[in-house]
View 1: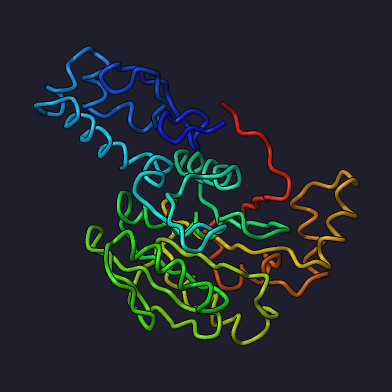
View 2: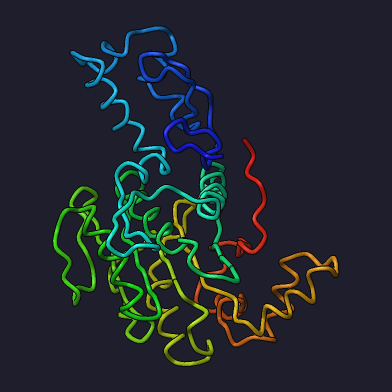
Length: 315
């Protein structure tokens, strides 16, 4: 089972780090941290107090945790990002990744580490697994600690957007203003844009590093003018880089689940099943050929993440 503090079985490539002044048990840090001067000095036996120029162990540990936030999303989310409990609307809880969220982040971070291009299409036959919330939190973390690009979120309605806005404003310790089309992120000096499927404002003169289309199973036929505007609104401003993150996400309509069950035991690869489903559904979620009309070919190949059959994460 994943442990967000120790990093055991947490997403991404990790290495074992055993410094007793940090933790009495071994912790597993993101592989990117191994080359940091602070980590190298501690591995060579230098005191944590000297490394972080601290007067107490508690002060040094806090500095270490602040350093870790820059590289460890699961650790940052569990300690810094709070969301509304789906089981109790009056309860605010930290974002501790569940199995579905960990699986998605694990894929994203490993491909990011290997500098692999991709546009991610997430398919699931059920809701309430927290994927939308997780993607939004991950994009915020990237904006603050990584590439500092602008982001764009488009969902089916304001009802879906408002909880995500609230989570973000809670993190920023500011009041939410519902009509706002974007929220300014002071630390990153960038903006997070929010739009609905029916009012997808065009982003002009703004480069986007992160785009998230949520609730796509609720969208109309991709030939519909609303769908065309949605795709053009953000993807025309997307920066072509391995740092860019474009996520299309939504549930599989009930009628399509029957077709998936039909192909499940046929031995046909998953990507080929999606191609066969393309002509069976009006959900733009599956229609890669439609999406590609609005995204430059040089962006890369669609990478499909199937959350219907969750594999076991490697330790």
